[in-house]
Length: 156
Ligand code: THU
Image (cartoon, rainbow, N blue to C red; front, side):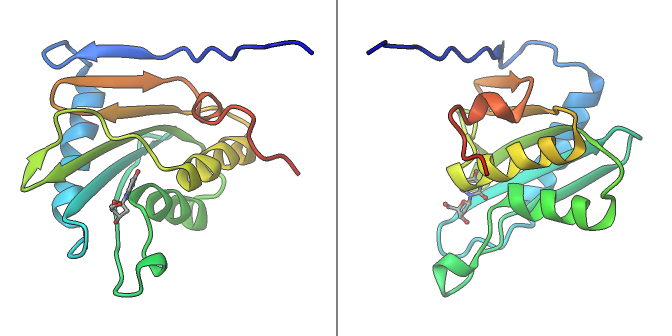
């Protein structure tokens, strides 16, 4: 028996640190998208901005339903939308934010397991990794590939 360890590299930016104009723009767009979420049951408003390599930006948010499992997270709404419409244009980066009581969460929002699985396959499908930025008021995290978010992922 061998005990092994998996290490996950990610970059952390302090709340006041300069993230660059493009990422700052994506964070604002994701926040605006969060405001449009349909989240009457949880009160947790998630917003996503996805930048494609050709510079196009798309936003999404979580869509809940009275039958709870029928709703969908912001990440999957966005990923499935861009892959449905632009399957040949790779994703460059994805920015996630969440709001509660009309305020950006203090800490970054981390995607759920199901969304990580979809992110991993999205990167696999485009044969190119993409950055995932998770933004909170206090700090912002950047990870270079969805693979790092889901070690020991399901493989078929
Ligand atoms: N949610 C997302 O949209 N993305 C995440 O990464 C975590 C959770 C949504 C699902 C549900 O509408 C609400 O947030 C509370 O779980």
